[in-house]
Image (cartoon, rainbow, N blue to C red; front, side):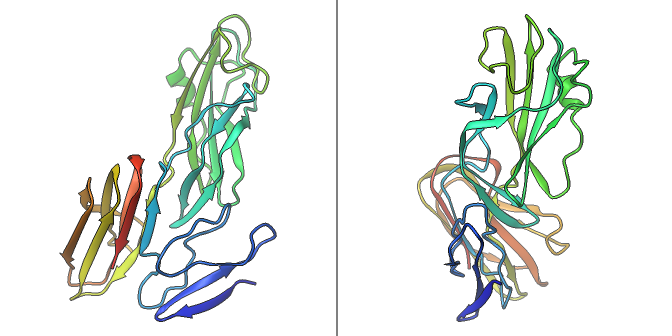
Length: 265
């Protein structure tokens, strides 16, 4: 069973699993545990995940694997229901599954992932018949599974025979393919700010990215942008006359390069 400790007014949890040694997650920072929740904190006076360091794009970087029929993914963070997870790079790639796509037609697949770190491959509804265009193949991919995020999509077509998932090399001279990264939910801090108090925004590092401050009026179900920055900054913001959760970080698509250290206090 996980144990809880207290560091001043911030409680945090020790995570135990078959694969992860006991590790303390300090209330003052977010530390990555591979295939483990890294922001499942016990709330006291404020959510303690008030600092996050971002040094890689929150995207899966889909590409041809070193095993050429497979789709490789880079190391990435992803966010499910406010909890941030991490998956290591899969250089050899994940095997494409499903029906053969007839010659000259397009097939579509989505790569998605849940809290357990398993990559699932979802094919378009009728790859066996194929689609006249990549856009039609993408439109026929079923809805995202519950409690999953999309790593991205692949469309592929082979002009001189059937495209056989898991067998046809993705760099075959007669194969056309396209990869689009999905929305991993970004990587954000989170903090509840009481009325009558100020919110200090601290952004440090050398980076090319857009850092966004968001707030929620429905207890974190939906978030709206409040302000944004593209360089290091130290600012103090006046808070609304009601308690609201705020979060600061880099949204999906907002990171290019460098290291961003975001902190709310």
